[in-house]
Image 1 (cartoon, rainbow, N blue to C red):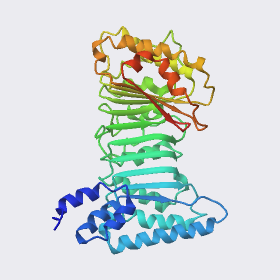
Image 2 (image 1 turned 30 degrees about the horizontal axis):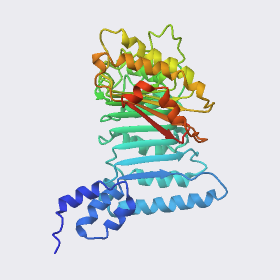
Image 3 (image 1 turned 120 degrees about the vertical axis):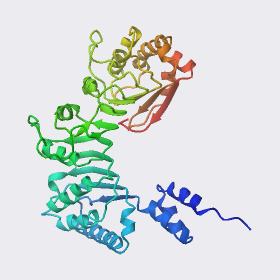
Image 4 (image 1 turned 120 degrees about the horizontal axis):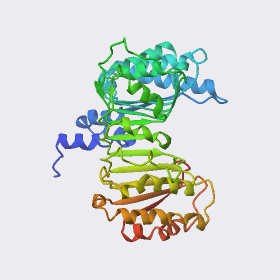
Length: 399
């Protein structure tokens, strides 16, 4: 007879199956000891997605309202299920309340049931399209001490002061990922929230920050009334054009992601290199779309380290994401020899003894011609022979 597994071990296994709801639904039927752990995984993440406007839009609205009402009834009958929800994502909330009031009402009913959300995400959301009741329900979630992560993608909110107010209520926030194109008014930033007294200045310490436009946030972060502390960031993600803002974020950053190359003059690159990140271990340069320009920028980024007598980051991993919409001819790759020689010189500095990998991600939506990987390896002989080079093909036009 097989000895049954301890319930504690069963719970640990089921807690790690949260990504596989089909399996968890089956596990919930096995026995009483399996039900609650399975339910925690089943309800761990909720995605509320409004239907796209198309020929059968009215039918799709009815289906959404019916499904959401069923979820609301389940939470009303068994409140502990609502307490299992740790992640809430709103997706495609882009219709005005006057046009689709049933969608808004059904969404509010579910949102109001949730009290333990850790991760709040807005994907393709227009704040001004939401009903006042739905805005209020989401604002209440922001005020709960459980929220530690807020992320956005294509989130439009007309006034920055409104966005700042929403964020300022998240007293336990540790991760702010606003790299997904947050839009707001272009007017000069007033001294916002100075009289609200929501949280004391610098009382909310961020560990991770992602910005699509660092300038606007920098203005706010520097205000005396701002509740967010950014001097102890561990992970930071910004567009390359805003990398000079690194000087405002302290020296604790260990992971840095820069999007797009910065069009610099190779002869004048004082503001480009990594002197503001002396503890950097992982650097990602993503969405680079011009091979020749990107090479000059990478060179400007690292070359000052050759003659630097201090503040050289103990870099371990470098990722370079190249997205191609132009030619793949072999002569366009020849300039990468410059980067290979640069890293050969850097390898002689003791600060680079821990350097492990240069990971190239090559991507295009049109497919990648055969032999490109070998071509790149041929022009990076030092990295290839040292075992530090990794080349990955990705069928995507944004990496």
